[in-house]
Image (tube, rainbow, N blue to C red; front, side, top):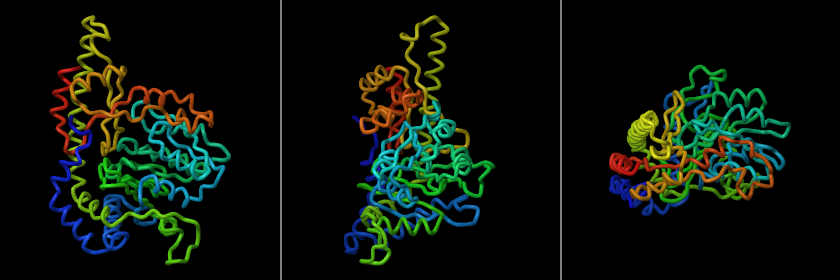
Length: 399
């Protein structure tokens, strides 16, 4: 069976570059921090500062690496001053990490519903959750598409809240800022859109290493300094610890691997988007076929159930970390995928408010769109080393 993310083919494509970079690190004797990590942080920041990569004061985004995307969220929340009892609004339909990190630090996640088409956090739902204990909002760039930060910034500024961008799946995505009311704050690339932003370098991400890794981004120099200190045992100077921090450092070998992959990221993203375009075209034809069958009097059960791709909002350029569709009859669709030997994943099988660890909060049951998405969402392979034409031909044979 073909892999969902073909990391073997990717490594083979860049084998010479990767082996040269890996050998240089192993021969250097510098395995934690050092020149590879420093170079990667500069290259990540330079990538993000392309186009409109600074705020209204002309401050460039800085990048600080760490040990994982989850650590990046935890450190960002610590740097923002999250305290026990504080409430943070997070989307109800996403990976657990944003809510988990809030709870881990003693805060309370408040679960906002999502837009039923883009699957991104719904600003109107966010507004309804703001209360006296609310301190911030986490906007998640789900499946590689940037959340509506124009609207989120308007809400944050009006209520004196900080805004955190979880771009774990979206490094390389773009967002059309248009003429927002807070254009001095908002920029156009993922990882530059909030008070502080994070990403993940988990191996299956569009920019992934060969282990865990993450990064934190901010244009605020004081916040960046605090992040660096928190990630290094609360220390700026060796053996002098100004605060209680944590050990969350990216190792040099992973940095070297990421530097090689970063050089190829834009070309890979182009292929991902072309793969997504092909899927879009196929599912549009499939939907048209369903409508034609219905018009001919064929029942919906006979003609097949509706399958709708995640909508990409106007002006957004997604990384397509996953290509996700909503299938009315997911169980039947998955049986057909299995029959055709097409790999698939369910992102995500339940909204966060239904997770056992959060049921005691007794909230979120009214989030109809998040519940709907958890019952219908299925992700298909889309990475740059996936033969999407082959998959589409398989889909034609079973749908």
